[in-house]
Length: 532
Image 1: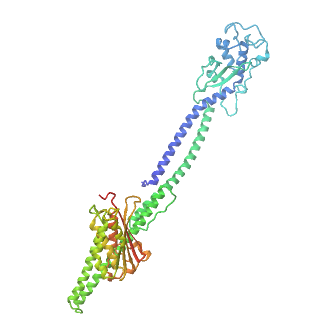
Image 2 (image 1 turned 135 degrees about the horizontal axis):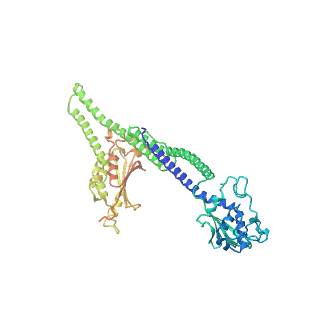
Image 3 (image 1 turned 120 degrees about the horizontal axis):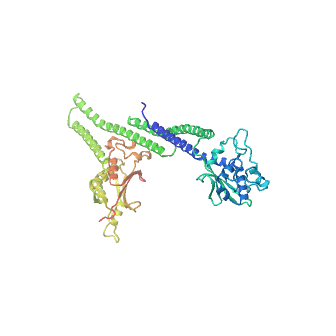
C-alpha cells in the first residue's frame, strides 16, 4: 500500500468533498425537478382549457352567477367534459323531462339556450375531438405531456371571486389558477387545477430522465474539472512544504549550502525565506567554528613547536640545558597558560547571559582604577594619556560645583567591568606605536528608547585598522593584519571577552576609525533610573 503523503491526503480530501457536493447537488436537483414538475404540468394543462373557461364564463353570464352550478353537480361534469352533451341539466333538475325550448342542443337547459347563438356558440358547438381520440385542439402542445380528461377531472375545480368553492375539486396549495372574467371585465372566479401526484406518465418520466441526465453529465464534467484543479492546487500548496522537508533533511545531513526555492509572497514563501536565512546563519556559524578551531590550533602550535625545538636541541646535545634554555621553555609554557586562560575566559564570557552580581557600581571609578594601574606601562611605552574628557564629567559630579549631577551608576559586576577597562587599555598599549597618544572621554547620553546611557570612548594613535576589518576585531582569535606580529604577545581574545561582558550588561561595544589615526572603541552602558 503506498504511503499517504500530505499531498495525497489533501487530494483525497478535496476529491471526497467534491464527490459529496456532487451527490448532494444531484439529489436536490432530482427532488426539485420532481416537486416542480407537477405545478409546471398543471400550468400547461390549465392553459389548454380555454374552451372550458369560455363555457363557464358564458354559463355565469346566462344564469347570473354560480348558484345553478353549485346546486347541480352533474352540470359541472357536463361542462368540464369537451364531448359531453348537456342533457337533463335544466332548472327542472337532473331527473326532470327535457326542456321544451329547442333553441339549443337537445337537453340544453332553457337558461343556457335562450335563442342567442352568439353567446352560446362555444357551448352548443364544443371543439370536436381529434381523430385519435385525444384531447381537443388547443390541449396539445409540442413536447408537452398529454393527459386524458378523465385524469384532469378529479383535480379540476372552480372557485368564485371570494375564493369559495363552487364545483369540482377543493383547491390545494400550489394549484394552477386561470382567472375567469365576466362581460364587464371583472373577475368572477378562477378555474383551479391541482398538480398531479407523482410522476406517472411516460412523458413525465422521459422529461425527468432527460433533465436528470443533463444534470448528471454536467456534474461529472464539473467533477473532472474540479479533480484536476484540486490536484494542481494540492501540488501548488504542498510543493513548498515538500521542498522544506527536503531542505531540512539536507541541513540535518550537514549540507549547510542547501536552499529552498521561494515562490510568491504568501506564508509558505515567508517560511521558505526564513528557512534560507536560518541555513545561511548555520553556514556562517559553521564557517566561524572551523576558522576558530583552526586559529586555536595555530595559536597552540606556535609555542608547542618552539618548546619541541628547544627540547630536541637539548636531547641532541646541540644546546646545553642552562638557565637561558629553561627561561625560554618557561616563557613558552606561560604563553600556553595565558592562551588557555584567555580561551576559557572567552567561552565563559560568551555564555554569560547576565552579570554574576547585580549591584550598583560606578563605572568611571573602575575606569580610573584601571588607568592608574596601567599608567606605568603606558609611560614606559612613551604613550601620552589625555583624560580631559573624562575629568570634565567627573568634575560635574563633584559636590563643590554649584549644580552637581549624580555620579553615573550602572547595575552589574564590578570585577567584570574592571576587566573590560583593563583589556581595552591593554589593547591600546600593545597596538599603539611608541610616542603615540591615548585619549579617554566620557559623557552622558539622554534617554532615547529607555534609560539614559553612559558613553566612554578610547581613541589611540597609529597604527589603525583597515575599515573592512573593523567588524571582525571582536571575533575570537582574530587579529588585524597590521597587528599580527607575535612580539605583541596578544592572543586575539581580549576584545571578544570585552564585548561578551558588555552585552551581558545590556550595553554595546563598537569599533571605528579614530581621528588620531588609530582605533576608536566606543562603550555604552545603561544607567540606573534611580541611583539611590
